[in-house]
Length: 154
Length: 437
Image 1 (spheres, rainbow over the protein chains, first blue to last red):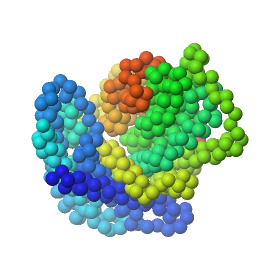
Image 2 (cartoon, rainbow over the protein chains, first blue to last red; image 1 turned 180 degrees about the vertical axis):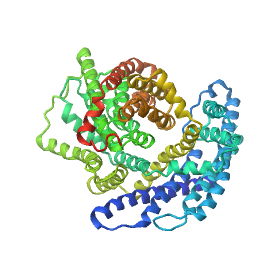
Image 3 (cartoon, rainbow over the protein chains, first blue to last red; image 1 turned 180 degrees about the horizontal axis):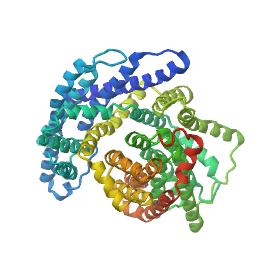
Image 4 (cartoon, rainbow over the protein chains, first blue to last red; image 1 turned 30 degrees about the vertical axis):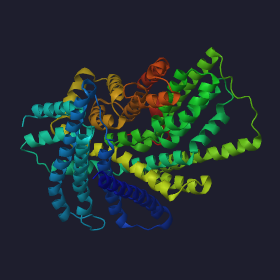
């Protein structure tokens, strides 16, 4: 199972890297369009938030697996080795629950995205809003995987 | 729902969850969810709406641009060129290596805007060289950590981008305002380094004559990092680009320089750097999203009125307010990462600042400086920990000199509070149209 998650993480990271490059490329093209080409591409106004939101939400999920979210560990020094492990599992359960709550609340947001359209392009906003739903689910998934791994560790 | 009860629940649950070790973004999320669930006037839809509006900020799009440019420059080996250029400029002065350390940090800060990148890059080259020359390991580690703090003060600075977006202050004006304090920090550290070399009698400076041709080569290669600074700052100051666009242009420029000048960039390296950029940006931005939700709830329940009243009663003088804000961020910086510390407190403080007549630009520079020095103060002092690891000494051995640098930095903070012109002179002179926006 770890291999499957490793592969998922790898693909997600590649996707976030590509989204980052497209995002920077679009911002650069905007400057180029304004001063050199003298044209305007309304699609860029949709691509930029699309890339940024998806990049942030997918990379937030991989950050859960890499344990890179900001945290302050003040109390684990008070615990025994077993206590530290239980503490870690409780924290991960909290992260998983957080992901699920956000995913749950994002369902209504998805419905809103079906109605709302991008003012520059007319493309439905669900394509951007869906990043919150999927990103939160992945956060929960990676947190659960870490709980299972922590449970197996001796 | 009673507003004061809601506020207490929101703040107390956040403090408890964060102290228990839940990641910051999730502590902010859970405390917000708790209050939204308890309050029948609010719906859960607020959650994604506010998180989305927090992340979807054009100003904060500058973060991945600056991060990408900084990471890419480190990969192509620009650090060595910066150190060589600094050697050419200050290497002959007494205490040459320590001066090179400080000047390199000033130049590097202008390129990367990240202090940890600075310690990792410059420290790895200079700390072993300084130790070999007879500097105490404690001094070389604490000087490297202290000088890296300039990276957050000299533009471009990611912390300034976050402050600008949170406090609705022009990022261009903040960048310009950071120059003078950054240079003063550098001069102060150069003074301490000179005094150390003078007192101990080590490192009389390079006496070797560098051939003219080599000097020209060093200068030309040193122009590359300087040209990146020009692209970023020049673009913003001339009004040709926004901070966000200049960050993207700098990224493309760095790729082109890496491809055609250094010839070290591969497609795999670009993707690798992009992945790292995405990860580092996402960690900040997910916090931005949940902090926006949390901040919205705070203002919904009237924290701005309460904080405003509190400051108007006890610290209505802008000087006292700036002092208290600086002390707060000095304290927060000791155990928290600068970005989340800003995201939580800046919106409230910036609103209070405008009420009592404190300058938001001056407040921003003070906050950035206070958080920058937090990176050399334990327990969170990540720059100090990194430089101690490179110097192969324990934290306690570097504490003496770190306290000297910390004390000097605090004196400068006091000067910035007392003399607003240190921060406001350059913006008023160069970008008056951006000041007060």
